[in-house]
Image (tube, rainbow, N blue to C red; front, side, top):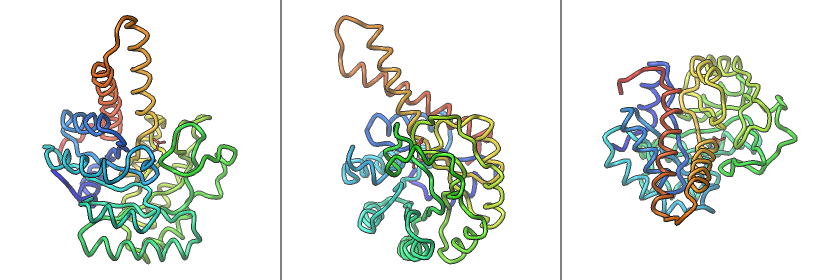
Length: 292
Ligand code: 13P
């Protein structure tokens, strides 16, 4: 069933779990994510990053995401990830997305507040949730196309991490429903082992009291997931490492079968590999809670 973000995240926070938010820029990913969530009987978030319009436009993948969500027997939030332009955000809302992200995090603080406020006002009047971002989540040169331009040499800098006091003011002024924060995660493949400032998550959560969002959520250790969730992370954006897992399974399959290849077999086995990676992620974020 199509679900709203606020309620799904409130339930998850109450049981100290996080909800997986999968970027799904093709039908195989949509199907694998829904199958994974249904088999585990867990809610899931299907999201389309505005930056993935180059892979498939919102107008093509959006109705498919909504259709699968409506026909699912678990709660499915359909969300716009990294909404950069007013136009794209409004188009997603008009299409029926139950949640949108306004990412104005590369703008000065006051402008980020102003843009976020404007979107929150419209979205809330339509019963749609809003994720905002404060701080700067870097992007690796490998993968991470849903985020920003790559900036490898800056990864590890900490002065762009979210400031707890600023976050408090930001949330009070914008009334956003959840907040993406910077604490050391990176969009795309981790070129070095991530060193996360997990205490920062706690400090921000204590100030804002709304669910926090981890971007660059694939490729993080089990232990860091658990501490991050305990400290306030309730939505985990997960894309690059599933994308890699699907491709690795396909490469393995092609190496094993050297006679004739059929696209339908490749698609089927890739979908299975994606589903299995998604289930691993959902279980990592869930720690045994079963209700929704
Ligand atoms: P990864 O691609 O690094 O898993 O991050 C996903 C994300 O943050 C989407 O917004």
